[in-house]
Image (cartoon, rainbow over all chains, first blue to last red):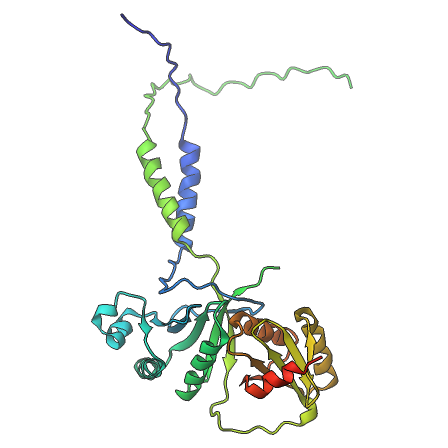
Length: 154
Length: 164
């Protein structure tokens, strides 16, 4: 018994597709900047501010809506020095109390005076903790800091 | 339009006879390469970040103990409560409740009539952070770049309760 199927041999020329994909690939490879790892998911509030977040030397204080604080640094060596070697590969540490935040802020500023402080808080977060963070910043004489926002969609 | 087609004379053939090369047709199976490239593309498309977040810059006065004397008449206090309502008052007037979209015209108006206007933002501790950012954003849009943030005290709550 023999089944003979009439199979038509279809050949698709993939060259144009490969060309386009090569283009896309090179585009994405050249423009990519990896998402910075973040300690906690935070929904940012929106504003009309046009000031871009600096790319390096950033110290991020993250405040989540369930009242947890994280301190993140973008340099791995500094993280290792400040938080202990086991945290060097993580993006930041959770802070148990506010005194710890003040101490770490001072140490980080000594280690790298160029650090810019950035507050990244969830838009649902209550204002109280952020007020506390701002008071701490003022106490440790960081008088210039930024609030991370998203560009408002019009 | 009727037009007679003129048959162009055939181009003269190049000098010398045509050389017929025997061509071997080569087919390369590109499927594995395409597979890999698809993978790479999806990887880069998913990990890439296009929009860098924006930031708002705040400069605090270096020392919190410095007292700034402000004329009562040029002090605009904006109070925001936990339920998201906004109250505005000049000097010692009783606070007046306004809607969020009324805030910007009011700010533009007041800062025009009094260039020395000083804004004070008081947000209740249980109010949302978003509300505070939005108010700051409105101030920035109204070109008021100097303002201060003060704690929301009990007296503020009482004042707001009497509001119109």
